Length: 191
Image (cartoon, rainbow, N blue to C red):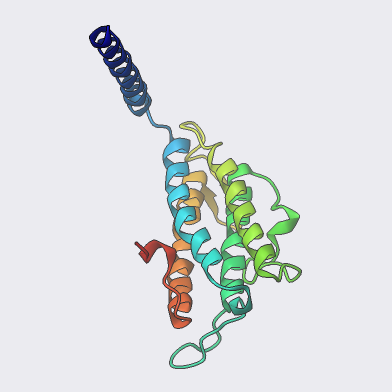
């Protein structure tokens, strides 16, 4: 009786594991799309930038280095607002719409967003908006000329997506420096 029960349980667990493995293989075998590949890359950026923003204490969001070559640079909170504002502008260009009101000034972000909680929410919302935009990129529209958010030259959704993925990393490096100057180990560097 015990042997039959154990054998049945073993077969059920094996069947479940095989079924789960088949589903995972089927999902990974699906043909990737421009939207899925670009969105996955954006998720990678987001998983680095958002935790770094959350790691800085609220009273340090106005921190700006003053020694050495750090002259005229943005404070920590403004770095984050800048990333978010550009996310909104890039997303709007991909979608072919006017940037949303919350996009603010692309250099420094909206002046009414000040506290850590407001800035982190603004950042998260901007990534959600950019994910939505990335989801609209298809094989047929990826290289169609669109209006660039800066200047008069046309661009493409692919070019905007590349900016949306790469631009936050420019500022992530600065965020990491600011965290370390405040004796905070960036989340991506923790065990």
